[in-house]
Image (cartoon, rainbow, N blue to C red; front, side, top):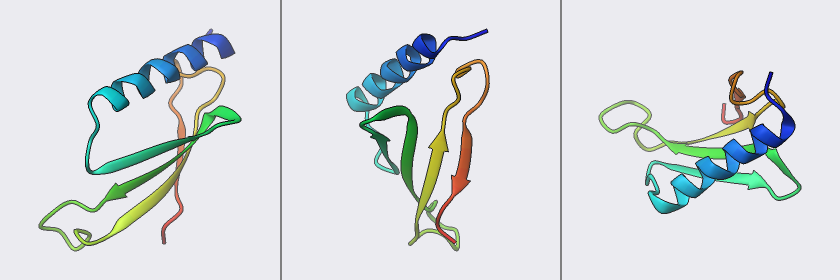
Length: 77
């Protein structure tokens, strides 16, 4: 069973990787008061009907992250 400390440690590590090697198709922002709560904006893939879109997602990581996947919800309709 993962612990809240393990989840936070893993998320901090993943954030460092993203800052070191950013991806221009996604923007991630975590809640400064809650490292388990994130927002993401992704660009639609080229050569698809979504190519000009930017789509917002809410990402919630549980205390058992990374042993259990995060909950991801599309905000953009």
